[in-house]
Length: 494
Image 1 (cartoon, one colour):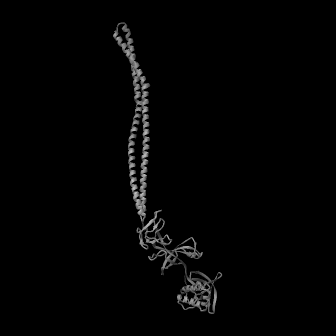
Image 2 (image 1 turned 90 degrees about the vertical axis):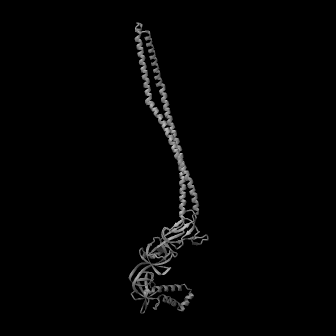
Image 3 (image 1 turned 45 degrees about the horizontal axis):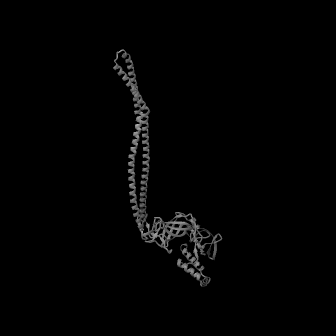
């Protein structure tokens, strides 16, 4: 009698035999049936896998732990990977040096070096232009400084002339002119008094002269003094009128005109020097801008030269990318190839954390959730098992070629292994739960009549069909809650 632990491989072989028979032509099916070929084929397959002597197609109902698993398949991928390629837009870059594929590198290690000869020539031109524009900018700055110094002297001279004219006018109006008027008025008053005194003295001497008390000479001297005093009075009056009516107004107009002339000259100098300074500053700014632009050009070319050397930003394994040749065939990138910005040359996956990227069917998504344990087997290492954990379950669904809807599922391997490589084929069983004490039979022993699960049980008198109440299941076994007992023998059906 077959037990549950040994029947699973036999079940798979039995199903393979039936599938093989179904694919044969009718004539061959008849020949196999007539010669007992089906029984022989089935027996050979079961015996080879299970190595038992019990009747084929029977299994005893057992009780024990039932692991609930979800089987998936996918590919290994690194949890983190960086792509490296040219970063200079619009320029075809030629690969001059390339880190060997499969090499482990650390941060700072050389990955790719692109040919920088075109940029070196461009750098020579840019540096020559920088020297020229820097010299022109310095000359323009020196010319501006010299002009500003000359303009300061010219402006100070004009300001001084205006200030002197203004002071001269103020001195004349507020000091000299009033003083001269006062002095002239005093001179007129003094001449008037002297003329009055000379006239009174002459009038006083006339009676005495008639009586002979005063000589003729004295009288003539008095008359002469009176005449002279009158003439002095007339002259002083004329001088006063000339000063107040002609001399002072003319001097005032002259000094006012001089001040306004100096004011206008200062304005002209200011406007002229401002325009000259603005023009010189604009020339200096333009020269400085050209020098700055030349400096930026040099810096940009130096940056592009630096970008021709690509180093690793993290540790990882060098994996060369594939490119298309002119004939449309794909091959690995190599030294001498020309690539453009945005076209990766190599990848640097970090193999310290590896993932299994797969998809789970819609009907089994309710069994899977992050944090569940999983067992992974790789086609490259079929005899080894790798522990993993469900990392995340995608929310977006998709359809495969058969139309079944699936969801992305990512498993994280528990530990790193230097033998693992991205792209390896992986088969995984997600441990979705466990029934610790389950009465269980192979899934091929259960069939459905409508919605009712049934199975065929061997009895002492033959066989009978029993209705079952089933529970949880995995890819090979199903839990039976009602309808069977431990030790019952059931038949495996297709």
